[in-house]
Length: 249
Image (cartoon, rainbow, N blue to C red; front, side, top):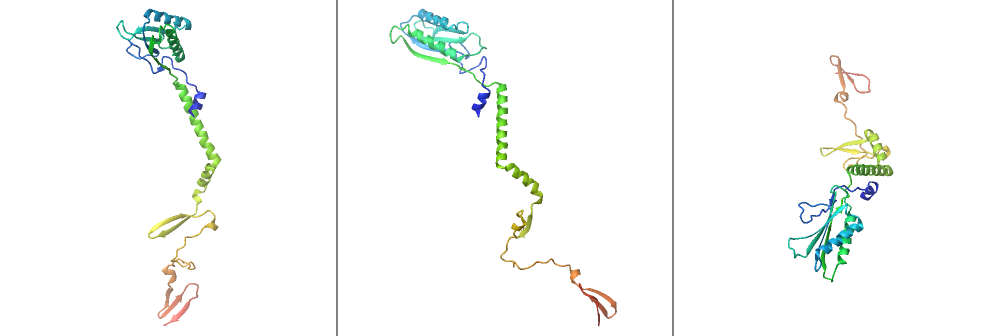
């Protein structure tokens, strides 16, 4: 995913910034550039300075990069040297490849001054890296593209699998879902029944006769016979669905 984002929004180098800045001798703070450290034997300082100046003229970097050759300590007999490659415009674009090419060419030019195999040794190059951090606009556009791709993938998956249609149908039928209420051991139980009434079955209880038909208890007032006094010693008895019968006592 990040590879695709970088293809659509390639990072642009930030002017005046770099990765792994170097700290040449005599500098209090690290800067963007390069340093080439080495040890020289039987080679004059002036000859090395002329060789470096010839490389600058050959590559045409004298107006872009400042090159300085100096000893790493104050001892005049020291054989440790450092070539500092620093940008003339600190806030300009730092071209990593240009500094690398210049340092390699200087190294080759110094080897041409060698008197023996031990004239130069302990070469060590420290080079800053170009800062390709994406800009703020690229970050915003990349984040928006990532969110759109994720949302599109999510919607496509639900459309492909039918999850959204099932969810919509469930919400539509939710108020009409048949529910069975029962009670077991002083606990209320709610069970969902199938939407097809033919498939709905009641839970079987081994202690209940399946042929037993349960009737609601009738009100005592309906079951009891209505007794009305017609005359003293004469009682009228009327039962449900029967005619009035007079009984004399």
